[in-house]
Length: 258
Image (cartoon, rainbow, N blue to C red; front, top):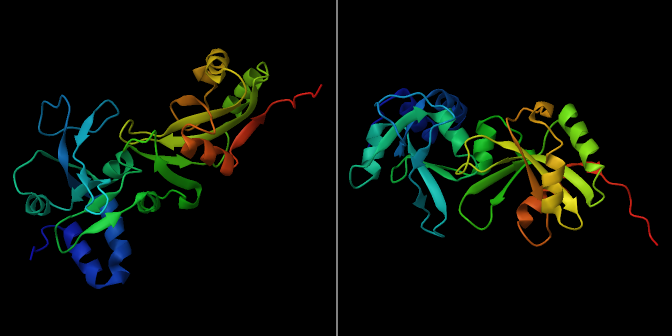
């Protein structure tokens, strides 16, 4: 049996026998460093500071029951070494940074041990203080990149007004929706997603409409925004979320019947 090697591990062991101590473990987890199997591209020194330009190669495992992806992480180097049969590259990083960059992908803490925990996407959302009632998860384009979609608490006024003005020039656009999206295996930060629903060649319409919207109009909390042509056939997860969660901010003029 493994003995605790640091305060985080001690808190985990204590919470396993006393559920009232579980909140203290989660609080300490967010303040601690954890260990993961992986490496950083172009890292020349043993120590480094996490920034937006870094690319991480994080090792994924597969669940036994359905072979779906899951990312292991560990409370100590001792726990990591106990879980793997041979030496592998590893990183020590802040737990909160790890949770943010892997949001949407299931996680397992200390696999192959007596004190393991699994975290699904909603668990991570709760840990990071987001509103789990406003977040749904799904698969993107049929691949294994976990995806998180979320409603916005408030529309960015300048950006939404600029888009309404631009969209009004295109009768092909019936409705426009705005939400947040995070695909953690593609990008470490969430960005704004603008879904366009309408008729005709929407991809062409989006290109023309986007040209009249400046990045200076972006008063949202996100560094970038993307446009997305909605469909009832392709990527139903995204389109259904935008419709079902009523994230519409623009409605075109009703079409006249002849």
